[in-house]
Length: 257
Image 1: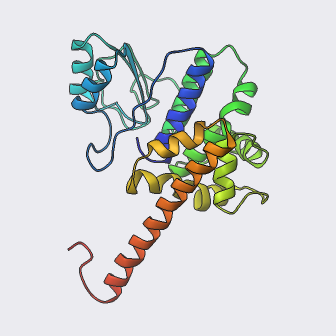
Image 2: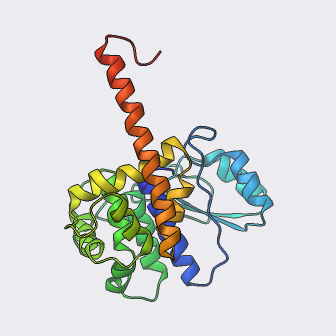
């Protein structure tokens, strides 16, 4: 997905797979031309690039037609999602969703990035503490951004993630903090919700969420600052648009016209 949850999910899974020497590419749909989730044209484009396995994050649990098409093209599909599931699930080699009727997980209130993180925990040889140190900053941004309940395991991960965010060495997150004007300040849940998340969300609405993804995976400070400035510019545009709409409403016009 193109919001903060989807972008952090994509970054987390990409970084983990790259650390395992996987040959991996990413695909984030364009909000305006493609809309949310899998679509047949995207699947075809991905197939033409030689991909043999598609892993979804933050979507896929209702993509029945797309799943059948993926299978017909000879690709495998793994779905990770946190949205409600029916008793029938798409054709895939694995479907990871806490809302599956047969899922034994006691905790169900994950964001998409939380489900992606649980997949990484299941696959990795590292301890949970090691993985929290590596990825809980991303999980925290996506979890707070998706406004899921900060209880249970979410609360534990976000508590750890806020500690990581306050001392992060991840260039992209450092640049995001800098451009948001919170670098050097204590990062808490409100800081994430009102300073970091809106900038990631904005570019997915105004332009392309690919820029936010590139920000989060940046390994060089120069590249990270460039992407952070791009993300921030989109947030300024979003604010300007919202102000115009607010002014129109105050003048008594229908803002939907």
